[in-house]
Image 1 (cartoon, rainbow, N blue to C red):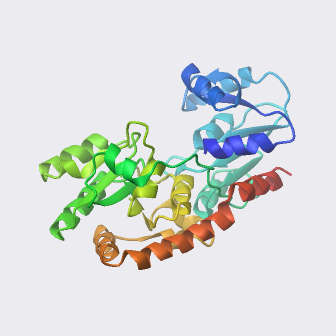
Image 2: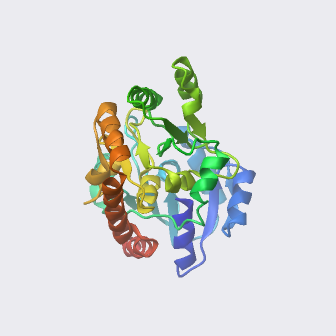
Length: 328
């Protein structure tokens, strides 16, 4: 989402300043990426409106728009007493405990998210049509460097896990199933995957701990996606959480085949979601992966078809155009 935020702010007709919900280190990281950062406000959750009150004090001047990037930011600016027009761009949402949101407009990424937001706003008309985009990525590391850097056997079936809250139980079941089919598979999660310890020790009990890796040494998950046989987004382990829609679209746009649980929020992306989110069980995924090993060209060609579709509806230029239309 940071890439899309930078893309949009560069094209806004007026200067766009950033206020970070976090610490000074995160503020400095954004400054190095070319953002005009006003400063930071400590806190991630808006308990008892405390974070919102801090934000209110930090915003001293009148602006045309106040754009909240992400669910936590949207909750934080909800009900803020300013002359701003407040707009929230929401990629993920906790569907279990949704507070009532008081903003002028909400831009969701999926129909699923949009319907949930309509139930939590005083006026359903404030929820815009879904808008998706893909980040403009920098140069991707060569595939051979990915295998070498992560010490993955060159003959292994490489699978990139694109969901930082994906069920570790599903990943374990998949690795065990592929082992029973005598297919050597290595799954790679990002360094921010929440349940890495649970995943590692569960695989260790099956003597399969060597079949999992975590991104490190400058290798990003998008680099792994480009080198992988396919990318997979398991079911979110946090009940009701809709996570990683934009990340999954970016992975799909790379041309690598992408598979997601049909319970994933990506299923709600207009016209495209069901083509990515179709797996209902680990056994179904394992059977498909076995077919991929036998006939990679056919499945890869389908991945390229979907990638072309993703680029056509979620390109950076389309995203900027769509966002600007929703600001009017």
